[in-house]
Amino acid sequence: MPNTQPHQAFTGTVSNMDVLVVDDQALSREVLSEALRPLGCRIHSAAGGVEALAELKLRHYPLMFIDLMMPGMAGYELVRAIRRMEQEKHLHPATIIAYSGTLYAENGQLVELEQQRLSEHGFNDGIAKPLNLTTLQTIIDNHFPNGAPITPTNPSTVPSPNMLA
Image (cartoon, rainbow, N blue to C red; front, side, top):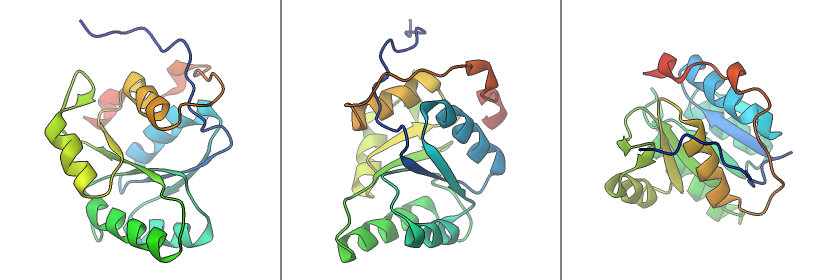
């Protein structure tokens, strides 16, 4: 039986961090943004790869969530461009999380083959749609382990994950 209890000490250091959410679906961007908002990060969004690259010319984003299947420039292509830009400009590599309905997960956790495929393409991790808040917290905890305790103040304000099925 999966653990339905929220994390007691959510320690992700995303407070005051610029976070970029890239998805061609407005509803998906909004659901993820609403889940991240109580964590205190500054959320920016882009409706596709070209728009995301333009945002990256304006500021560095230590954390990004990128949809895999977008018209024009898919998530895999966008991540290759971001990693190339980081190398060319000698930037600290961002933590890039795939956020997609095409990822295969069991009990909210990506299966090993999915993790490996994402890693080979330059992603640090992935989260499957529909969004699972516990999985989101776990991913942020894993990548940003040294922050202040943060818990959502009103989980009912997050749109229903079923809207993204």
